[in-house]
Length: 196
Ligand SMILES: O=C(O)CCC(=O)C(=O)O
Ligand SMILES: [Fe+2]
Image 1: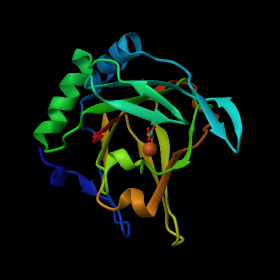
Image 2: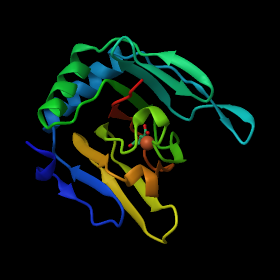
Image 3: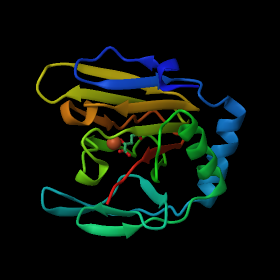
């Protein structure tokens, strides 16, 4: 499989690709269970408008030993790859998506969320490639252009793969809004490549 086998979203100044059934349902469910048990989940702190809050989701940071992650003024060392994460990383590698770390998010239910942001930290480079795997509850993923009026909403399915590349992070923001009716949890893995 190649990135060109995914569906390209028709968005200006963006390269966003999506494949709903990247993993079959049973593999996706097994993986979800394993990751829930194996990853180094913790609830971090974020600074929003000068005040500290608990992140409205759990997170885990895994990757190559030398990879560090700067987040709200803190530096975290990556925990090692687990076999399950390493397998996925290998499959992405076969699609020419080279990554050395993954930020995992666990949304415990529809109250957990992620606010508007771009993944544009300098260590991700000029044109970051972010490969995002979704497991568990379906959640809406929103994209909005920073200057134009364009918006887009996508329901990320169990076992799906979303790839953001090119200028996407430069011109667009994305978010995962609260969905009160969702009672199930969701795990999302965002594979990234950080440089030093
Ligand atoms: O949960 C998602 O689908 C989005 C996660 C995300 O944007 C991130 O980790 O940077
Ligand atoms: Fe993101």
